[in-house]
Length: 217
Image (cartoon, rainbow, N blue to C red; front, side):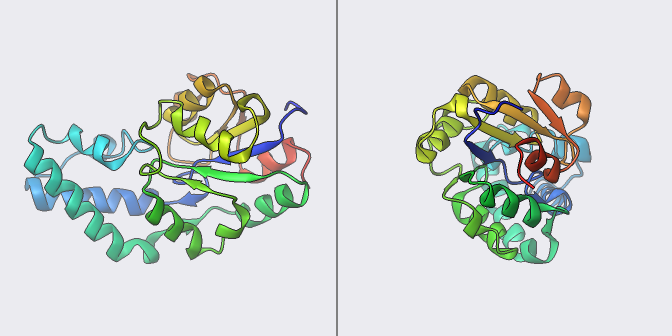
């Protein structure tokens, strides 16, 4: 890992928080309720890592139905969120090690800011991060590099001095196009082969490995 890295940006779902079951259950509920049919799980989860409003266009081309899907998803997700969200092993330890080593930390996610902050608050993670960039904080979304570049600006570091850690191909694409180094989170939701195809700078089996690669212990 480059010794020039001075700041670390993290994706949220599948990277800091284990939300696989939460997202899948919410997608199942929303599509069954609104569309009245079952959609294969692999299709429901195919675009995790992009904003919800983008994902829902995979299931309808009708604007009214799309709006209903988004509304049903958000309402049900809010009801079950705190009971189903989980923390990946080693997350607190890794973030504490990075903070003690002097790395500023931020979150760049395709989730709305309020919901992202709620997830962090469930596990007292908010204090580790100087900022959260949500889907409603920037006009473009991953795989566009804009949100990551905005995160670098908020951190006060050029992209080449920042590492972006994420578990989706969209994360790797956004980070690379922004000019950051990228770390593939193999503990997340996407297969290693999908992430390897995006040519990340490093691939890590755990979040603790990210900290260790940066010399944080």
